[in-house]
Image 1: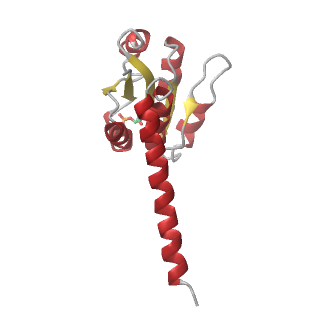
Image 2 (image 1 turned 180 degrees about the vertical axis):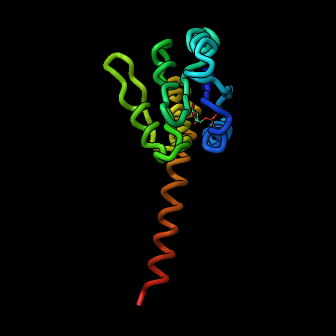
Image 3 (image 1 turned 180 degrees about the horizontal axis):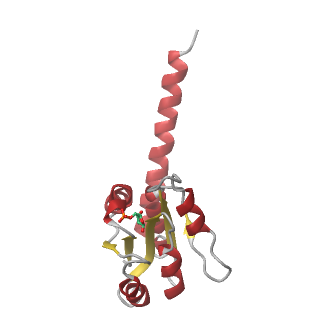
Length: 164
Ligand code: RP5
């Protein structure tokens, strides 16, 4: 199976990124976690992106806050799908990172999830890999079913609580 690269711009992003790690572990998807910065370690980030495909990665997740150029930098140097996580790490509450990550020019797509949306970034990467991995498709179906059952259970509880 292809690996998922989880890159964060700073180790201060780790509490957010941890949710992506948890999801990939639950799905049994192999991954590597790195701290690479578009601004502070641009050469290392570029090198990682350029060799990611030949190093067995299928998807790159890039999490960064503030003037978040990490996902865009990876998209510039790799034709692998890149998922951007805008991290809330400044006085602008993550809106700065959201706009920096999502507003990519034509030809350089970045699939941007919600601010701090690390779990969805991991789920999207599982969905991408599931195109060629049948077992992941089955796990995704089970995950969705569990989510549905949880809501139905809550609905039942609420209806019972407020029934006259
Ligand atoms: C970004 O700047 C990082 O992704 C982080 O969210 C933010 C602050 O980084 P630190 O100053 O905490 O290292 O590059």
